[in-house]
Amino acid sequence: MRLGSAKSKNAGTQEIHSVATWIKRFVALLLGAGALVFIGLRVYEAQQQQNDPKFAKKKSGMRTVTVDVTEARTGSVREELLLTASLKSKEMVDVTPKATGRVEKLYFQVGDPVAVGAMVAELEDDELQQQVNRAEATIGVSRASLAQREAELDNANAELNRSDRLLKEELIAPQDFEAKRTSFAVVNAQVALARAQMEQAEAELRELKIRVSQTKIYSPMAGIVASRNVDEGALVSPSTPIIRVVKLSTMVTQANVPERNLGRLRVGNEATVQVDAIPGREFRGRIARIAPVLDAATRTAFVEIDIPNPDAVLKAEMFARVKLDLGTTREATLIPREGLVYRGTQPGVYVIEGDRPMFRAIETGLTVAGDVEVLANLQPGVKIAGRGASMIQEGDRVILSGQGAPQKAAGSPNSNNRSTGDADRPPTANRQAQSRTTESAAYSSSSGQ
Image 1 (cartoon, one colour):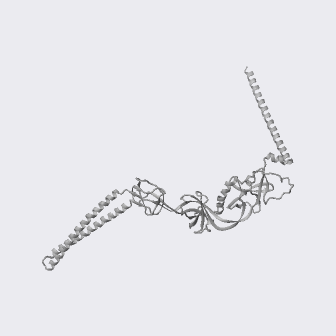
Image 2: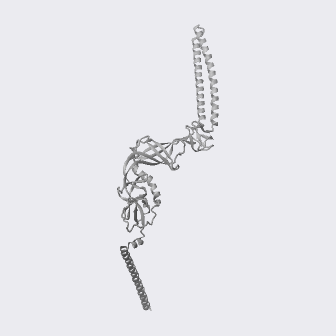
Image 3: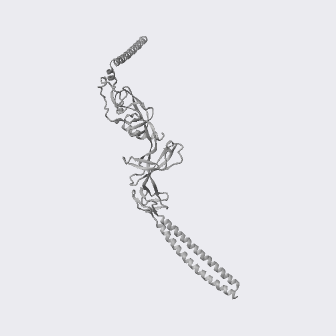
């Protein structure tokens, strides 16, 4: 029985192995057949592409796009420096008390105009007033004591004069005269002490009055209340700002200028300022200060620009874009703005070679009117796609139009071709990217980045 069972197990194992081997052979046959079919299709498509270009175009999804052909050219660029920074008020002060106390009255709110010397707040002064009353009473006592001592001094002086006459007539002994003179000196010293005590009391009264005056808080300059930091009833100290007063008649913006542009800036140079919060309006400013020392880490220098703000439309901490005219021009390679396209964040152009556009990455600089400066990887005279370049996709063919397009014969087979894209449509796909070029690309060129 055991022998028969073993034989049955061996037979089952052999059967499983044979089935697995058959499955492997079947899968290998399927893979080989699939590979042969794929290779055959590729060979067939290659033959069809050689014999029938229409088939190749249909199979690859290739389009034909009509674009204006233009070329890179040499032109003049006026150098400008673009900076971005926040606006700040030129004059600003935190109004703080000179003494510790509890705020009893607060007279201004945020946005209120403040005149120079206006009372801003009052602190409680009951205790100080009581000390003032006590000091005044002390002065009264000192004054009475002084009057008494002065009367005693007059009496001692009279006694001394009488003793002097009696001594001369030898009616009193010299010892009695010396006693009178000593008594006069003592009373005189008491008068001086009483007078000093009264002066001390008066000095204490003046000090108390100064402390009382410090409970009245005044604005050191005229302006507008920018912030109110405490309310009535708050306990404040000399380190506690009560309100902040700003003067908006002149605003300032501070920026760091690269070392390469610093030598062309002078105090008094004009600046054009645009504020995102007030679109369509330009403000004029002037360079007020240039730092004499550069930042060793960034190789930039601090520059401060004053901006008149007579109607107070500019507010502190607004984001501003500052344009400084460096006063120089240079020759540069320029392309039309509509010829600039982007692959992701990489700017470039489509160079025209026959009917095939080839993307070429470039480095952009300033944007001048409708032209963009090219800093690298494109030479003047190279033909590129202009209007319609934003519609070109990888693998497209182009039909050229415009002044730079080659003239075709009347019987040219491509003369009746029509573009599958709308060549007259503005390049909306690149509007946002081109808008960034107007600012960030200009800054990278002129600021030395």
